[in-house]
Length: 410
Image (cartoon, rainbow, N blue to C red):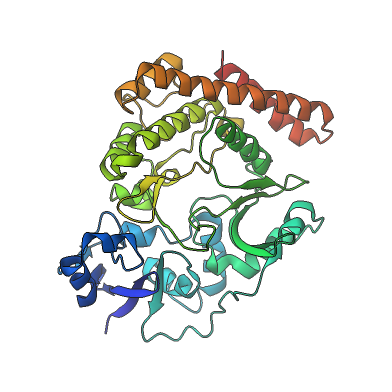
């Protein structure tokens, strides 16, 4: 008998996912079809909205994928470091293919979409307790060398995070407010030394350029980059998030198979009319920053949309910005732009802003200058940091970033 996973939106059962003979089937239930057919469109502005993805409207026919999970479900699976941790702990107990992995972590996935496994005994898999958390000050100022490993042990199963970088989703309490929030905590390995420091300064460039970014921190020893989860409102209500792999109906493995022009087209297709201009302007700024800091890993999974209803779909905040040429000297952009993979100059980027992002020459010029001003501001910070730093490895990374940033604004 095929295994079922019930799929919920805001804790309401909307359909079920089935794995059968190598194929994956998702079908909406009758109640969801009824809502789609008979309710007033305004209902989509409240918690009864049953659609699981902008690319999968409610219908009576099943959505069938022959070889892999539907992109919206695959988006919830961990990758890289976290996947290796989970496989190491559970491969003897369960079949860790994509469907098995989703079943395994499903009790701990928290968001607009949640899951419930049917007729499965997962009692041998420990769930993350809602009461278990770590203090923000301990992340920022701890001398515990095992802190990241401890976080992985506690929160690995609740961390549906993509990418090869060591990271985990942890519940973090701010002692001043007593609020507990979800934060992504990133570490780094020997292949990418001082990656947390690298990401911190690159994200500062985006922030100072006026791009929406999540709340983020760097621990005092620069071992951890800490970023607040951005799909939860201040009232603890989950928003829907879909990355560009989902919106372009691509597998995670195909995240490098697209173009930056196609991302702009996807924004034009899915973002609400009231948010379209601002989203395209923000996307243009992201592209400028990625080129200035030489982020060669700005692939499809590092862009997405965020929404509470069909009337309020907008580009998600910027995240996962790093200077990859610090580690790969001749690195190139992740996706094609204007048919090439190279770092583009001001003229080419302004042309992209006007012809692809539909900005006026004035708007594109002002947006570009904001990015230049931001990187100049961070350059001053880098120089000051280098002058006061004694760690040789940190100095080496910071000097490389200084050189790349300075060359980008010439």
